[in-house]
Length: 157
Image (cartoon, rainbow, N blue to C red; front, side):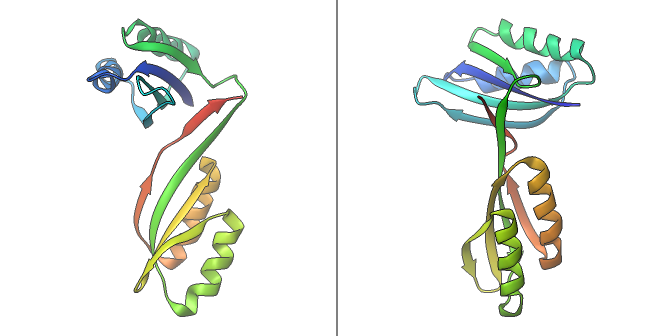
C-alpha cells in the first residue's frame, strides 16, 4: 500500500541526500518525492510517497526519519484528513481537426493548454492521482509525446 508522509526539514546542504539515503539503505522504495522551500527560507517541505506493506514498516520509516538531525517534524497522512494533488505537463500531438475534441476532454478534467507550437500542445493538469491517470489514458488518443509529473504533494486539514 502506498503511504504519503510529509517531512519538514531544515533547508541545509545534504538533507535530501540523507533522507533518500535512509530509504535506500533500508531497501524502501520512494514512489514519489516532492521538495520545496516553505514560507520560511530556512525550512523545506518534503512530500514522500512510499510503498509499505504493513504498519510495522511504516512505523520504522517514521522512526528513522525522526532520528535524522535536520528533520523537524514527520507527518503520516494515512489516517489524517488531508488534501493531496499532483501536477502534470504533457506534450501531445495537436491538429486543427482535433482541437474541439481535445478542448472538450481538457474541460472535463479541468486541464488546459498552456503552450501551442506547430503540431504540439503542452497540457497542464492538477488533480488527484486517479483523476490524472484517467486524463492520461484519455490523452493517449491524441498521442502523448512527453510527460512530466510532480508526484503527490499533500497538506493536512
